[in-house]
Structure formats: C-alpha cells, structure tokens
Image (cartoon, rainbow, N blue to C red):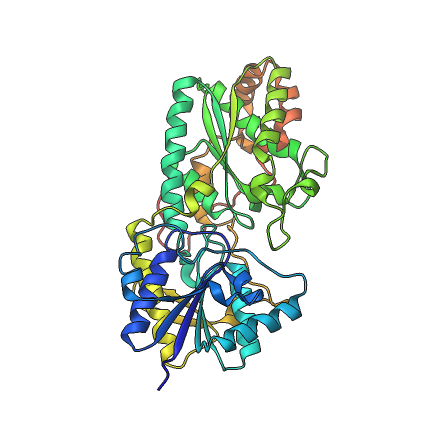
Length: 430
C-alpha cells in the first residue's frame, strides 16, 4: 500500500527552534511509517505550485537538527493579491503531492493560513499548527510563551547588558529598538531582565501619539538620571510603537519597504533615529549635552541557535503535532506545558474577522508594575517638593517651567494601580 504523506511548511519570520519542530516531527512520523516532505520556501511555494521545491526528509537529514538556528525549509511571508486563485493553486498542489497531513509552523499570519487550508480541505487533509514567534503575541493559555521567545530574550539581554556597560564606560545613552509589531513582550522581557534604564512598549500609548510625546518620556528619563549623578543609560523600545506614532509630523511609513503581506517593515522605520533627534534637540535647548546612539536589534535574534528551553519545547511540540494528526485530529494548535501536550481548536485563537487574536502586554498587571518599579523615568511623584526642585535645577529651569514642560512625560498610562490583595504577593521595595 502507498504510504501516507506528512508535509511541513514554515511561514513568517525566523524564530529559534524551527528546526527542532522539523526534526522531532520528521523522526516521529517516519517511525510511525509515514513519509515526510518539507515545503521549501513557505506558502509562496504552494501558491505558485512549485513542486520542485518539495523535498523528501529522512531521519539522517534531521537527526542533529534540533540545536541549529534558522530553518532548513526556509520561510516566507506571503499573502497573494489574487487570494482565491492562489488558494485554488495551493490546494491543487497539496492534492497532487498526495499530502494527507500538514504541519504549519509560524505566527499569527501562518495560523490564518492553516485555518484557511483546514476550512478548504474539509477533512481531506488533516492540519495542525505549531505556534512560533519571538514577539510572544499569540494568546497561548496560562501565559505560555511561544517557542523562540525565550531564546530571543536571552540573547537580547546579553546584547543590552553589553550596551549598558558600554554606556557606563563612555558616558552615553543608547536607544535600542527591538522587534514586536503588535505587542511589547520581547522589549519588556529584555529590558526587565537586563535592568535597562527604561523600556517603552506600544501598549502604553494611544493611536496617533506624537513622536514628541514619546521623546519627552525618554528626555525625562535622561534628566532624572543626570539628577542622580548618572550620565548614561539604555532605553529599550518596541518597534510596534512605530505603528502608533506620528513620525516627526511626516508620512514616513509611506515610502518604506513592505513585506510580502503588504505590511511596512517596521525595522525600516527610523524610530530610534527620530526619537534621538528630538531628545537631543530638547536637551540642547536646556543647555545639556548628552551623547545618544540609536541601535536596532532583532534580525540578530531570529535565526539564532535555540537555548535548551526552546530545544526541549520544540521537541515536545513536533512530537505532539504528529501524534495528534495520526490519532485523527485536525484544525488545532499544539501547545506544551510542564505537564502535557495539548491540542486547542483554531477557533480559540481566531476572532470574528478570521484573524488571529493578539496577546498584548497588560499595563495594569502586577507583572508590568514590577517592570515599572525598576525603571528610571519621570513619575507623578517627581513633580512635588524637593524632587521637583532638583530636577528643575538639573534642567536649568525653574520648577514651574519644568512641570509645565514635562508633566506629560509620566506616560500615557501614568498611574499603574496598586497591587490588589487577592493572594500572596512579593513585597516591592521603595
């Protein structure tokens, strides 16, 4: 009898651990008597019917793959202009290849594609999705991280820690922009663990916020540090702020390069550069000379070799995906917690429009409050008594002028509510 065929496809940006899923899924499927093929080049290959980019995978191909970064099947971001026609080509390609099972590996865009195929196949192809994104913005239950996030945070902390030491040594400030289109989990995770001076995330700001407002938050942090006798610092910025900010009063995003899904490449938007320029201008107007350097980190994190957490995590996910499919399952996302591997229906992650729901940072949570407690940034209490006078003296203005100029820099979500006594909590100093 002809063997059943399982196919793997990767979508979206790279994330540490992709190869771990490919490896574990391939080994388990072959051990269960199923042939495995890899779709090289992501969904674009299926949309274009490029059967020459489908390769058969063996255990020898993948047996030592789980510790490597990147993706041996590559990846792509692709949402076609002629969606219905491309869907027809994709489904025809899947049928011609004799694919019985499909594992999709990716973020919210890939989950959308997986659900699309599941709905169209009507059971003829069983589909399961393995969630990955370093942005950590897929709403997995219980606060579970998406694979790749822990490795990206780990490496990001290493980079930011080095920049903090360089900042201290040279007496300068760094504005470090990290990935996170929809949510600030990665930026906050890096900033909190590294002990960065301040971290700004899109969840703090409303739509259409002026770049000047965000720059004032950073300038206020710089002045507060100077008041403390510190001439240096590191600010971590989530790139998703760019989608909310009005960049210098211009339509900066219109001329920027788009990805295959038609979205502006946020890494191309000069968020750090714009904020640096505004901060520098404000500081110079106050007679303060501060060296500020803007830097992007993100591509350095995406294709890195996974740390042990993500190696183990992805082995669980790949194995679980195959077992779910061979047991007759379809139309679900695989998750793994410390106790079990589970499948959750696509419907739990899809909103009314058919798009994936987004997990954002809850700026009113205790977890966010901890992060804020260890940042150096202007807070409402800084505009009182002796502290206000000292800040004003540092900025070479009188207290009234300082308050009028920087009172808005306490942030667009200025007051995080106190912790509720709904269970054991860890006392926070200061």
